[in-house]
Image 1: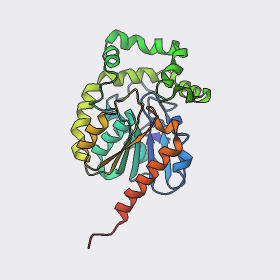
Image 2: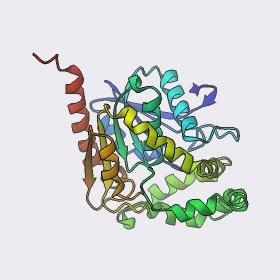
Image 3: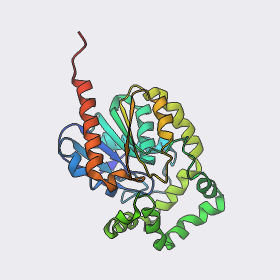
Image 4: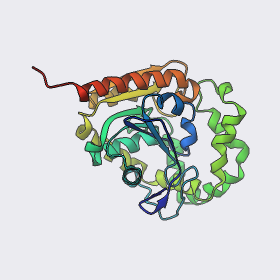
Length: 279
């Protein structure tokens, strides 16, 4: 499907109110394969590969700021005919979902943010600093494509129990990483990371009225779980759900529990929208 002139691949399943699943940095729609059939029992599910990732278009001129990602997600909603939706975003995809909600709050019924990248997580700051070095940024994409044996190790790190990441899963995550443009786009995103995080923080008061669920794995090694409390204070309507033993991708390790948590939240949200005025 073309969205704002960019070819985007996506999964679609089920019927009912639209739910859009947004993957994280260097991920793609493959991440959601375990929860799509479960959530599709009650909703119409859309899971795009964002441009610059997966098997969607990877152009060198993509706006790599977070606001650029949010605008591309909005273009996807327009192209798919989605007037309003519940947004489920993981990691950088969660931050993108927040940015979109700030741009067009009327298009977002609710937010489910799965360990979203945020200004208060201190994990990974040294890696970000290294990737901002111009020479490292230039060399990293080529070096990363050549270091394919290390890709699976990086994927395992996202699991609470790395042994649960089977070979099929590892192969699936690694498959699009050899495409030219994927690592380049990820490195470009890092260049404006701190500016994007500051903009994200400024947007939170604007979306405080949108029902929000924060989901974290208790063994997340990529985004500090303690930052969930800080985010929840800035989003008074937010709830927090912790999946014990799970890592950065809790929907991968336990899709049944994750889907149950999300479905219960979405039912509560729907009841808010369908309830009549107070007497």
